[in-house]
Amino acid sequence: MRLCGRPSKPGALSAAGTFYHPRQATDTPFYKLVAGHFGEFGRVYPEKYERDFGFWRGVIDDVVRKFLECGDLAHGFARVRCGDCGHEMFVAFSCKQRGFCPSCHQKRTLNLSYHLTRNVFAQVSHRQFVFTIPKRFRLYFRHNRKLLGKLAQCAWRTVRDVYGFVLGEEAIPGAVVAIQTFGSLILWHPHIHAIISDGSFLPNGTFVPMPDMPTAPFLKVWEHHVFKMLIDERRITPEVAENMRMWSHSGFSVHKDIRIEAGDTDGLEKLTQYIARCPFAQSRMVRVTPEGKVIYRADHHNPIPFPQWRALPTERTLTRNFEIFDPLDFLAQVTQHIPDRGQHIIRYAGWYSNKARGCRAKAARASDSAGNKDTQPSAPVTPAKLRWAALIRKIYEVDPLVCPKCGGEMKILAFIDDVAVIRKILDHLGLSLSSGTDPPHSHSPPPTLTTEPFMDDLPWGEHADVG
Ligand SMILES: [Zn+2]
Ligand SMILES: [Zn+2]
Image (cartoon, rainbow, N blue to C red; front, side, top):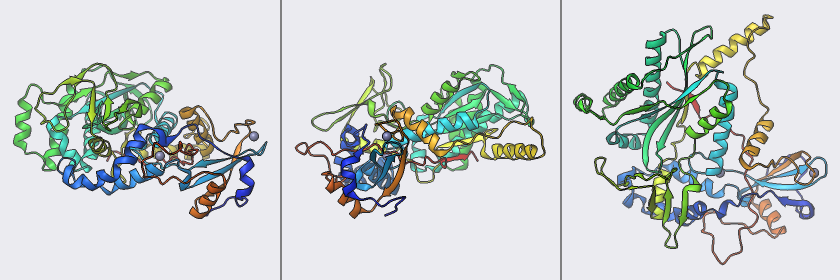
C-alpha cells in the first residue's frame, strides 16, 4: 500500500468519509453486456470469430478486464480531504484504456483537443480531410494492423504533395492525422481523418494560404499512394491496381468540405474530439432486449445502406439506420477497434510534427537567452492539476477536487491499493466488494456507491509523428 500523508484509519472515515459518485458505471447497458458475455466470447472466439476477425489479440483481454474494474472501489481508490472544512471522500481509480472504456476514452479525447488547440495548432485556418479506400481493401488492415500506420502516411503524403505542387516544396503544411477503423456504425471501416492547415508555412514561419481547390488532384494522388503501398506490401499486384484505375468509381474518396476559420478554437476542439472519438457511443446503444439482443443505431436518422457484416463487399444491402446484434457478435464488432498496444492512433506531421515543434521551441529558447524578447513564447505549460480539473469539469460539469460541502480545495491524502486494506475499509463502511466480471444480478441491491474514476495522469504518449 502506498500512502501519502497520514495512514488511513478506517474508523476515522466512517463519519466524514463519503464517495464521489455522479455516475454508476456498472449500471450502463454496455457494462452489463460486457460483464455478462465477455467470458463466453473469449471461449467461443476461435471457433466462431477467428476466421472473420483474425487471431485473438491479447490486448483485448487486457483492456476489457481493466474496463470491468474501472471506477470500482474494490480495485483501489484515493482518499481526498478538503483543506478548509475537513470533508473527506474516496475516489476510485480509472482504467485509462483507449478504444473501449467510454469514460476513459472520452477523457483522453478531451485532453487531446485541449493539448492540440493550445500547443500544436497555429492561429491559421484549417480543413478536415477524410480519406477512404475501396471496400475490398478493408480486410487487409484488420489482419495486418501495421498497415493502418502506412495508410496514415499515404494521407499525409497526399496532402504534402498537392500543397507542395501548388505552394512550392519549401513551404510545408501542418497536419494532425487520425486513424479510424469504424464507420457510422461499428463495422470494420478503416479510413483516415486529418486536420490540415489551410496553407503552408515557410521556414521562417510565414503562412502561405492555399487557394480553393477541387478534390480531384487529391483523389488522384491518394489513389496513387495507396496502390503503391499495397503493392509494396504485397497485398495486391500491379495488375490489380492497373485494372482498378480503369473503373469509373474506384471506391477511393477524399472529402475536405469542413473548414475552420483562424481563431475558432471551439470549432477546432470539437473537430479534434470528433476525429479522435471512441469507436462506439453508449448513447447509440438503444437498448438490450430481454433476449439480450443489442440494438445499435447510426449517428444520424437518415437510413443508409447498412452493410451486413458478413456480406461480400459487392453485395447490395438493405437501407436502414440501425443494426441488431447478438451480444457476442456485438462484442466481436466492438473489440476489433481496440488498438494494438503501442499503436499510434493520432499522428503529427509537417509543421506540426514533434520534431518541427521541438526545433522551433529550441530556437525560441536560444533566442530568449540571447536577450531577444521579440520571439514567440514557447508553448504554454499547464500544471497537471489545473489541466485535469478543467477536463473533469468539461466532462461531468463537476470538479471532484473542489469540496462539495464548502468549495475548498480537496487534497489527496493517500492512494489505497492494498486488497486487504480496501476490504477492511469497505467492510467497515458496509460496502460489499464487487466481483468485477460477474454479471450484476437483478435480485441484488443496486451497486454499492460506485465512484467516478479520475486519477488519470492523462498521458500524451500515444501521439507520434507520421513517419
Ligand atoms: Zn470543504
Ligand atoms: Zn476506464
